[in-house]
Image (cartoon, rainbow, N blue to C red):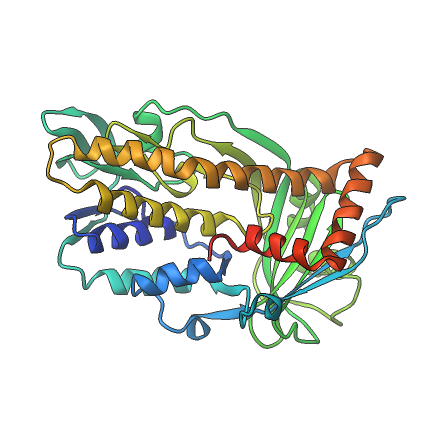
Amino acid sequence: MVGGGLAGLVAACAIAKAGLDVIHLAPAAPVDHRTSALMVPSVRILQDLGLVDDPGDLGVPLEKIRIIDATHRLIRAPEALFDSAEVNEKAFGWNFANTAMSAQFSRRIETLSNLNQLEASATGLSKGKNGWQLSLSDGRSIETRLVVGADGKRSFVRNAAGISIHETQHKQSALVCDLALSFPLNGESVEYHYENGPFTLVPAGGKKANLVWIDRAKKLSEIKALAPEAILAAIQKKSQNLFGTLELETAAFVFPLSSFKAGRLGKEGIVLVGEAAHAFPPIGAQGLNLSLRDVAALTECIGRTGQTKPDWAIGVSKAYDEARAHDIGRTKMMVGALFNSLLSEMLPAQVLRSGGIWALKTTPYLRKFAFDMGMGPR
């Protein structure tokens, strides 16, 4: 198991609980200051693995989603509010700090006797007598039937296995930081739609909020370089002063956005999960949710295949590749449609987007369909 991020921690835990002996390569990494909105099905995956007990102890519930069209276009969408009570859930999901999840997951997996975590990285990958030979940064080597790559967008495992990607670098980046508001969000995620991307305030408990601001990369880089007072003034303007006076709780970080899907997710005993397999802009909270569905599918494939034959890992990688094709393809289409329809300057696209939000606002069946698409299989 290669990769010490959230997807790697969950995958290492899940595979160990599926009965395999796991060596988890998890070198020290920079602190991840972001948050992740995990929908109900994803939270249940974590609960089934024993990584999360009551999600309210670790995260903040997302009970409502409000969309505000803040563009200055001729055709604008109506303001829309979606409530989790419509799908008989207390919340669509919970907003978790990545640092809190990482710390809790690491503590929980320490109790697994068949999981050995090493602070080493993979430096070489080649065919061995009985599967794959991994060379480590500490000079050791490992021979294994199954290699799981959860080592991010620049995945060593993916590149060493010769699995290609076609990556699209977007003109947009994402600026993230934590804010203190004058008024609490009360469990409501507020998403302003602007011409160059959404500006989203996600509840973080009390009067705190996490900001995800997607805009032109050059503009956000210029804003990040400003003094804190000037950064705050830009954020205040974007929020349309709906939440009173704002305060910066953390520094602002800017992340470039890109999209890709690996040509194959499984190959000859190698499988890819998380951002080693796919990456999309943070629209509709699909990032880590999709990664957790990767993990669930992988453990299901391991359980179905069994380990009685020498080539069992090849069977797992083939079954996993087939199992994840539909969900990832569907997510890629959904995120692409949402992202491109917002950015498009073409009038037909604006009409379709506005009409689509009107339909979601007024048609119960379409609202339920949208909830199911956004939350994933329940």
